[in-house]
Image (cartoon, rainbow, N blue to C red):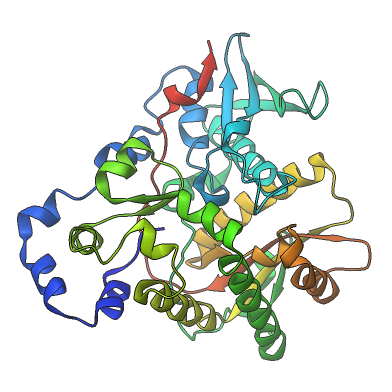
Length: 368
């Protein structure tokens, strides 16, 4: 979650620390976490077909950027995908539903990347039940190149305010095979309020807020050392860290200035949302969740192709006790009776944002 210069100026009021940060060119030039961003540049450089496809798959969107995937390459022409349970989110995702969706994103991106070299993947999901591998993926020949691959390296989750421009009907029509798109102003306002109330519930519930704070990576060194979680980097933010304004302690204190300004900034972002995309299922099995991840990945690539921005705001779908009223409201508002709302995202025209840190491929391979 890289915070923009605009946001930092808001937090500190444009004072002397801001001036110092912008005036130190050498400091600014050395604050990019190059090591943590290297997997984006390395994508596609592998020659072996499975490793090449996986070099793209590790760039898939996933909750809290936990990157919960591990792969076993010991069997020729096969990738066995596992969920790394040390990366669980026990407070905000107690049933690992969102993490499973993230693994669906990973699987679909691997399939799309493999298609570029003519390789078809046959998936057998949960071949040994839920406690075994997430999938066994067998590589073969005969795939046609998926055109969505062209947008893989440009795909982002845009956590910034969107413009007031409406999402055109022709774009909505292209997205509707993948998600329910809501553009009616009244409905959008209703969903916006739901996302705002749910987000506040998450951050004012101490244990769920702590889970996020524990996963924050403050500055270049922390991001390079642990390129997962919520990245807080760049020259501006590191200047605030050096000044003691931005810290893990401050982010844990609802009475701190930074915490309060963060609330205002998030509300501003949510208010700047002209449309929402929703994915529901009539069941809620692990396979349903995997298929939702595959759809979300294709939705994210399709929005990228259309010049749209997409940002998941699924706090209301989290399954911890304090979120229950919002969970029930989300389902009454967005799903047919008995169906499950699996993903909820902001949709609109947003600014270009940077790449998220990633663990390199070799750290995700557990057997070869």
